[in-house]
Amino acid sequence: MSPTSIQVDVVIPTHTKYLDLVGSIGERVVRELDGFAGDREALAYQLNLVLTEAAANVIKHAHDAASKDMVRVTIQLLDETLTIRVYDHGQGFDLETVPSPDFAAAPESGMGLFLIRSVMDKVSYTRQADCNVLELVKYLK
Amino acid sequence: MKLELEKNHGLSVVTIREPRVDAHNSAELKDYLAQLIESGENRILVRLADVRFIDSSGLGALLSAYKRTAADAGQFALSNVQPQVLSMFEITRLNRVFEIYADAKDMLPN
Image (cartoon, rainbow over all chains, first blue to last red; front, side, top):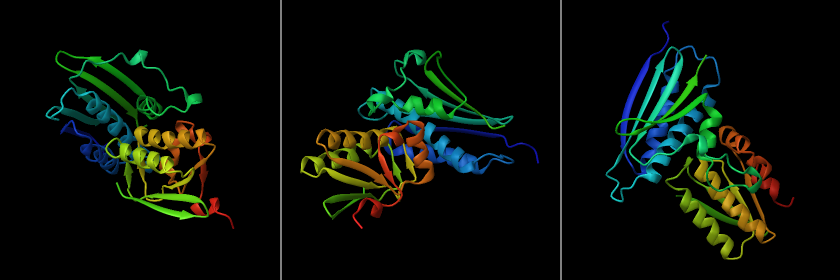
């Protein structure tokens, strides 16, 4: 059987009630994977998690009280490389300067990016012409 | 958010009747636990049997309650944590912070 190829492109309003929906797309994508020999339950959770965390971060920083702004999320599987991109129109941030949580202090916030970095193989955040893109890569081989 | 409270031998057992704790409902959980502690309860067990997904904000809500009870020389514990949810506590090393029981009855006197 030829390797699975997937391309998903979704746009959701910047409201937390859509986090469940966007996270569940990640779980659903895992069900479509042919020949993935790893732990499917763990991978499904991880994709749900990173989509939830990334979308929540955009929603949190959206400067739009009426929630008319949108979050665009794309998921692409090609050559056993899973790439998730989350687009935002906010001010952006420097990924390299975001500190790791101080676990000794049992932090109540700031763990989202740490979780994303923990479960993905590559994380980058770049500024494009009219938006910012958080790119998350997971190698399935 | 559906939450159930049961009191047993001085222990407040809170059961989260939701499959998912994320940034949409975690503030509600945080506020509920804060009010419970404010009302004088300082031995709290949160049952996570129904929770199959938790994000960083959900972990933060539990940590907030843990800190409040610890400041009052109380006890705050978790039980019935599903395997994938438990992995979140392991990645963030919060499994070293929280007392985690296999079952709620393990925290009750025999």
